[in-house]
Image (cartoon, rainbow, N blue to C red; front, side, top):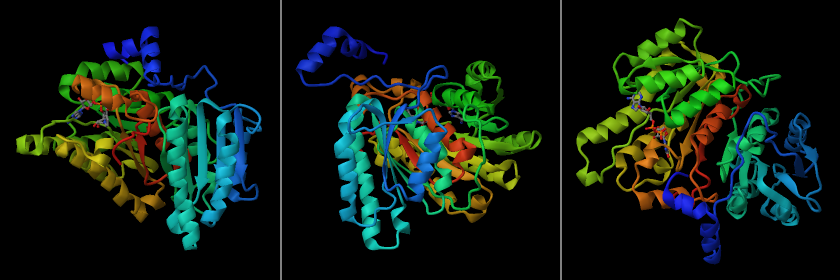
Amino acid sequence: MSDRLESLINSAPGKAILGALGVNPPPELRRYTADQATTPVLVDLGGNASSAVFQAVQSVLTGMPASHTDATTQRCDALIFDASHIQNPTQLDEAYRYFHARIRQLGANGRIVIFGRPHMACQTLSAATAQRALEGLSRSLGKEVGRKGSTAQLVTVAEGMESHIASSLRFLLSAKSAYISGQVLKVANTAAEHPGSLDWQRPLAGKTALVTGASRGIGAAIATVLSRDGAQVLGVDVAPMESELRSTMESIGGTSLVADITAEDTPQRLSELFAAQGGVDIVVHNAGVTRDKTLANMTEDQWQMVLNINLTAAQRITDELLASGALNDGGSIVGVSSMNGIAGQRGQTNYAASKAGVIGYVDYMTADDALRQRGITVNAVAPGFIETAMTAAIPFMTRQFGRRLNSLSQGGLPVDVAEAIAYFANPASRAVQGNVMRVCGQALIGA
Ligand code: NAD
């Protein structure tokens, strides 16, 4: 929150004026810090205790510092409802009754996590409609609790993948998902192997990561968070950003590579570099640019440049890393899409096309059997309004609307995107496949 309007809104007189107008100031989001307990302590779990998902949730909670509370009578930090057993719309009443009795007890920065099944894998039409209905329930709950900085999500778990929910549940309960709400996450890759025991403080220890556009903004945050979680990071950026890149990489003990990702030889340089050091495990295609003009005013160069950097270059790099064998089994490919790639944006036909293409990449690669068998996951994040140099360049009033039109009434921070990527890269997320997770505070307009 950097400009004068932000300071005014957050001052005591500003809050009083907004209060009188019935406009609430944005809630303060609690984010992850290593030295504070930032997972919920008081958790209420509802649903059918005999279901496999319910039991898997219970076992994850046992390994966390969470204690069970009766949220019908006490304040609580998280409400978890397992709806995986629900077979028809009438049975959805159970979800209504569960949340109706407890939702007032959910404290600030609270968490709601609903578990269900992928509706297209259901055996009956009634089960499919009831399971799909959970999306509307969880998204609306997100909009109802957002004012207090709380979030709500749905996790769909493929039959037999119950033992793979730990990374998703831990992430969604933690302060690492502070700016993520209204999302549906799929635990879907039935070929995934169980990771066994894991050091949850440093889940990426021993892993190597590539982050493009790593010198500043979201890329620098991704590099820093992956390094915090134990990964050795190679950051790439263009020559004009060399000194920023070096200082970011030095601060995390990473390696810098000055390269333009669109250059002919960059994919091969990267694959040779990684092949010489045991391969790469995590590939994050973060580098991106905007060249905004309405289509009528856009030059062909502006069109091509944005598509080349944001889409084609990333694809060429992954193709080469896969073809050369430099991308290790059990690895993760993470694309950086955008809310504008989902909803479209005036003046951004080039950018939105490139970012929608990133989603196409995830969809297509998710269906690749060879990749699934090798335990390589493909996912993307779709940031909404994140406070970076890219969004600081947006005209003042558009910027104010952009950052406030979401359930949490504020812009996100680069670290919010980075935490989502670290969750996808976690070895315990091998079944978390084919997701495009919006990191947008649940944007109120658009798709
Ligand atoms: P940024 O401009 O601060 O950083 C982008 C980085 O990519 C820069 O360091 C830039 O030098 C690098 N880069 C550009 N072209 C490159 C090339 N050809 N080769 C290598 N590096 C190159 O932007 P940001 O806000 O941190 O955005 C990071 C990513 O997140 C982008 O893909 C962007 O489209 C996406 N995104 C950002 C937002 C937001 O609100 N900031 C929202 C949605 C999506």
